[in-house]
Image 1 (cartoon, rainbow, N blue to C red):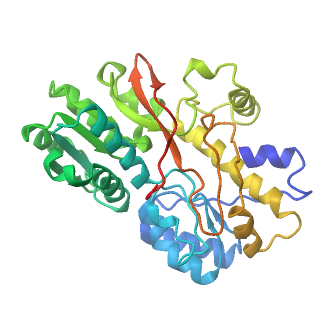
Image 2 (image 1 turned 30 degrees about the horizontal axis):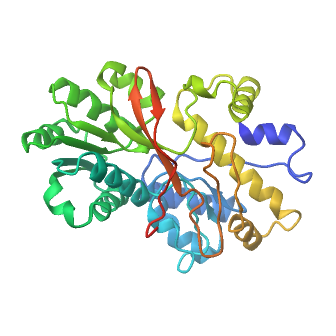
Image 3 (image 1 turned 90 degrees about the vertical axis):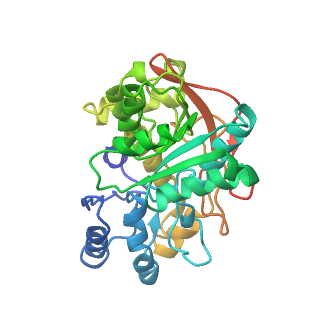
Length: 346
């Protein structure tokens, strides 16, 4: 929808964006097949915002050997910020290790004697979040973490894992999950009458696709972190960026569920891509695409929280590196505290 709007406005430097999209069903082998099709038969200039840590991991070597940009991937794995070994791959959203560290900082301050139980997806995504949290807790991780329960993406439910974590006496429950399992976590914790301090990662924090289906009454007091504005939050109703978002939806994507965090995500990611294409001018080579993507200085997107800006360089392939904590109250997330810089090692 965003690229269609840009094309209707005359395109970029007089050129139209031809956006080709295939479904890989969140399956790494299928992702390889579709990436090859895009590169070898569609002859695309680059691949943009492909979804999922396992899928992007599966195509990373291929994309780099072909020297085709794998740009602004839709996953926060830390490994996308590795320009030395993978100069054609770049992340976009704040990385999972950084987010894990922010929760650790919060717990060290608010609940230093916590007994933490962690549910995590058994892949690069879940392990990255876990590593960030463990690194952030430092020496205290050994005593604070009382149980860890991994789950495979193929399982129908995570109920058994949650029951196990409660039985270990955890008083903090951390759900490092994708939306489907995030919603299940909230429901099961409520069903068990368990009242831990509940931390839910950003990937599963959408009001429309996670919180509402899991039940507002079950979600009170959950802690998460954000970098994007929440379209369901009345505090942004007069915000110029949110007005642009609403105008865009009204004209170009009226059927969108604006409460689904993915809609705001797509809007912000597409806006970043358009910024890079504009910066390329008439030099639309793959090398220049990467060069411009690695030369963004303080870009404030319309749908990202004030003060969180995109900056990249030849040695820094992590565009967004800040987050703000939030708590679910009533029917919305309320931001609290300062914007926290979450650079790994920072």
